[in-house]
Length: 314
Ligand SMILES: C[S@@+](CC[C@H](N)C(=O)[O-])C[C@H]1O[C@@H](n2cnc3c(N)ncnc32)[C@H](O)[C@@H]1O
Image (cartoon, rainbow, N blue to C red):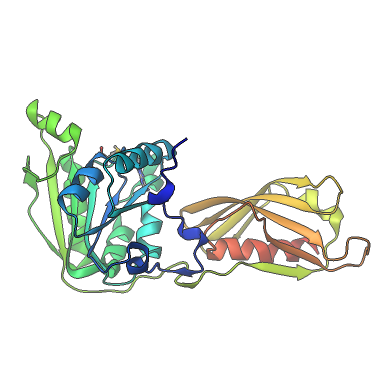
């Protein structure tokens, strides 16, 4: 089997965030970022035509990641990296302030139903991130076939106050186009482009920003309490977590806890391991830490789950 993983970056394994992109690409070329790249068709063409930019793509779908990696490998693209991660989180946590030259979002799902509001990307928070991570003079380009969506984004950008907001263009000709875009234009379906340009900088509050350390806690644990915490929801400020299941190792010493945590709307699944430092001593101190198979971003909610569980199990 051919390995295409040279394009994929796993920032959750890095000891420090935001990332140092010039070390990753081994050059200091301008950063261009695509949010929700789908099968990677736009990324492939864009990278071929713009070889002096460093291109970073975000996707949530594993199938799309695989398709894009195959494409990039086939055409021997050198200037692209892709990340399996919520673009809202990635854009805010993985880039230094004033570091991105251009951000592209092609045909996102608008999620117009209220019940899907949590999935929307282009909301007020998104523009706060752009005001931090785009360079002054850097641009965000949105393509959509929903006029109301472009208008809503335009209003949000305008209310943020840090952007020059351009007029929405109808059926613009772009140097690089997606397959659907070409087809839609051919069949007379309208598409819209919104471009905004950053005029002033405003910092954004990051969840990580700094050393990306491994959390662990130590203390006394009453093993009888383990099963009482399953499905209990713990909440504090914008953080929450729930223990969805507990599994015991065959020798009965280690307990593995399946946890889902949330920082605001950013959720992660991971496993924690709890074990006594001295297996034969009933008074032993216990350790709770991330299980070695798990690699969530060490957000405040992840760190808090490690600390709080020690407290409730003691
Ligand atoms: C309608 S498709 C468009 C794909 C591609 N941009 C195109 O124009 O062909 C939207 C894509 O965005 C991805 N997506 C949705 N929400 C996302 C998020 N929060 N972060 C990263 N990708 C996301 C989806 O997995 C999907 O592949």
